[in-house]
Length: 113
Image 1 (tube, rainbow, N blue to C red):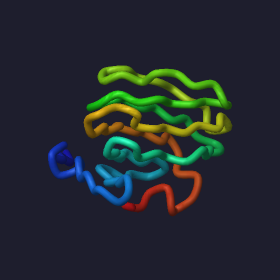
Image 2 (cartoon, rainbow, N blue to C red; image 1 turned 135 degrees about the vertical axis):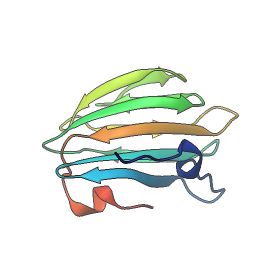
Image 3 (cartoon, rainbow, N blue to C red; image 1 turned 90 degrees about the horizontal axis):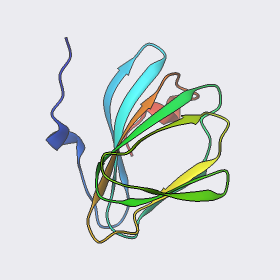
């Protein structure tokens, strides 16, 4: 069994959003994205994989194929890797997203930033 503490993965920085890897096993990776108010994840894709996102903290907007949708604490979404998506924390509090990629498209997707 591998175990992580959510507190060690929720690392908020004023100058940029962060990504903290929880697990990297075989073809999959699990990580937490952390956003201060006003921070954004640029539009991108994860070709060849499925993406599952759980909003752990805060509220924001996820845009999928240019269609915005509110993402509230506790919401869970599934994205196909060919869908272009972004996220923005437009709230007043920090936000964290728990993300699962079923297949790592490129090594850089499994690195902390």
